[in-house]
Length: 173
Ligand SMILES: *[C@@H]1O[C@H](CO)[C@@H](O)[C@H](O)[C@H]1NC(C)=O
Ligand SMILES: *[C@@H]1O[C@H](CO)[C@@H](O)[C@H](O)[C@H]1NC(C)=O
Ligand SMILES: *[C@@H]1O[C@H](CO)[C@@H](O)[C@H](O)[C@H]1NC(C)=O
Image (cartoon, rainbow, N blue to C red; front, top):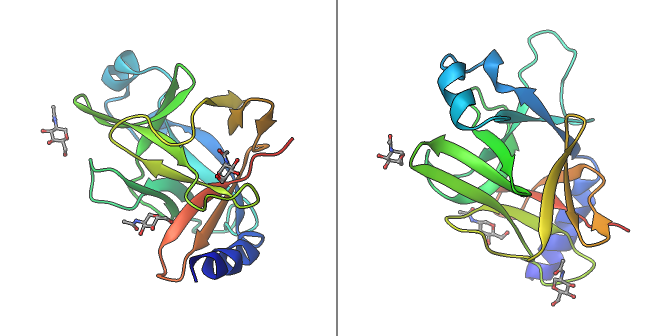
């Protein structure tokens, strides 16, 4: 049952693939100087791709978000968030910055337990999930790599059978 729903979900990934790009956070953060001093390179993460409406009038971008109340761990999701969360990379780990005392890692989980199926992004309270991953910027694009494989900057947003949106990636050679 779970496998079937995941396979159905994968079919819909193909219509909702996204590149995720850094958006300089000073565009929306009024206290940029204090935050910038604390955590250099902090940014919103905007989804770019066929499922978005970039370039159209009244465009509200998709942002990488967390399916939980503010400051709590949860599954990574992508929606037209008017108040998107902030992220930064430190020592190859992608972090979500909520406030000075709440900074949480974005973890990559093997939720399907299959080599053919994608990995899921989940914000947790501590680093966990698939070991050995490294996050990096390539230009303004977000990449995840693990050993010789990487996701080529591609993320997939899809709704599962419960209607909850998840963010997934495939590792490719
Ligand atoms: C940071 O956010 C958490 C969760 O919302 C809250 O419990 C905590 O008091 C906040 N800390 C500061 C310094 O604002
Ligand atoms: C997060 O994703 C997992 C695996 O896809 C799912 O089982 C779980 O219900 C999701 N959690 C929430 C709070 O949506
Ligand atoms: C996910 O789990 C499956 C089954 O154990 C394994 O074959 C696959 O290599 C795992 N993927 C990663 C990236 O660890």
